[in-house]
Length: 195
Image 1 (cartoon, rainbow, N blue to C red):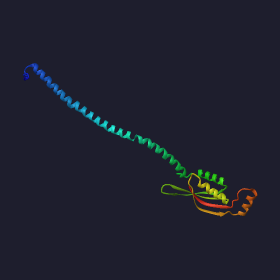
Image 2: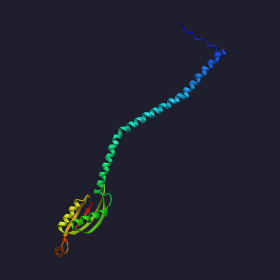
Image 3: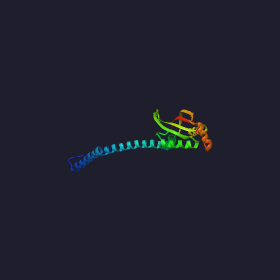
């Protein structure tokens, strides 16, 4: 059974109007497709591409998130270690604190500080070396205790150019110590101290 298309007669006003409506509809559909649908499709594709890119970035961030907690713990640990090292290796001259510590150590060991003179700083590769010239007086065993206390301070202190000599008037100092009690200042020690 064959299907036959009706004969189109454009002279007939009904057919002509129907053909014009169909042609106008096709033109409007083509224009809508060209200027609206394709533009929206391009916008949709761009947004889809941005979404994929951002999702990949988010996945990378989420993959690194467990490392963030570990890095925070490492920073806290390293900060504590840095603070500890700063107490051992001061980054600037702390003369008042150092004098207090030396005075405390000297009093505890029975030594008298005669001279404390800051020397010029010596720049090194990673730090600046602070140096001080010091002279103390006391007994031989008290001097050994004094140096022992220095060795046990939290601040690392190097002593160099140590010279120990008998104090002038040793006999008089010994007689005075015997008469009044206490320790005779029999020796004088001079040294360079580098904290």
